[in-house]
Image (tube, rainbow, N blue to C red; front, top):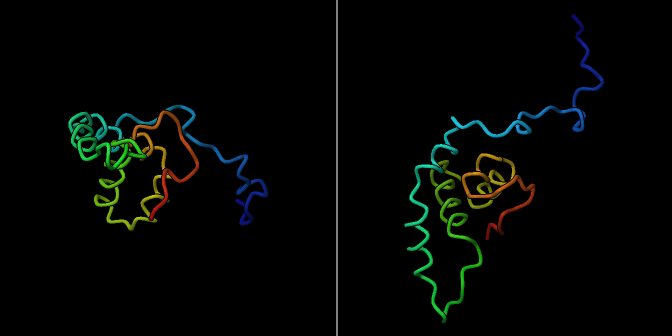
Length: 108
């Protein structure tokens, strides 16, 4: 048994990822997405916007979902955005069709 690390270890291009096989349907965020009343919450969210306030910039699912993630995990605004950027399960929960390695919105 070698005590020296593999010289290939730590190279990003060689890092294996299980996500090419799809997300685990038993993950808590996958299950919560299916249980959440998105249509009802979206109607309520969109009812706050009028011709005077203008249309919402982000979808109801992204805004409401990000708030839920923030409070469920006890995160700051900035950490919530960072967690969403790094976690495909959180992005799925928010309704994204594919993983995006960028901020979903400005934490301010």
